[in-house]
Image 1 (cartoon, one colour):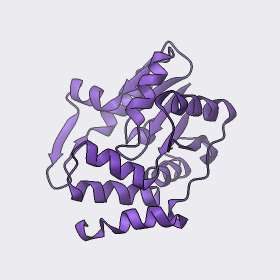
Image 2 (cartoon, rainbow, N blue to C red):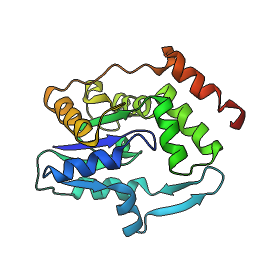
Image 3 (cartoon, rainbow, N blue to C red):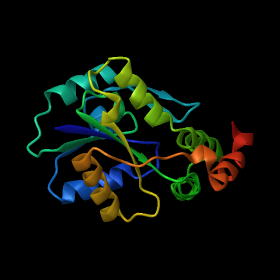
Length: 190
């Protein structure tokens, strides 16, 4: 079974996947594959983002034959890949803000990512892709996992639990006042 691990930049996808790799699971980091395959089409200077060849990466994921079951495909666009299940990592916006600042993100990029996490862009896209029939999978195969306050190992365990039980967390930052205040501080950068 191939499982996408996706989420807003900074939520801990790579960290969680490294913990899963340490547990013996196969992991593909799509950003690394995109660089190795020369599948980066352009640099979006304004958004400080790379535009990748999704078709080439989809072919790669389709043809990939992992040894472990499950195996994981990681990126903030992994939910657009042909996988059997999608895990969307979610992180409280105040924690995401801290992480992005530590990574040296400029305020404009922090604002973009906080807003995306606040409204659940990756989750929404994953459910939409599934329900549009791009990949034939039921919407219940898109599972949110809240990793706020979890260690690397705890987050990996939580992902495996969600995979095994096909059940995740209900995440709604829109009704969280602290999350609202965090995002509002960055509105001037949007």
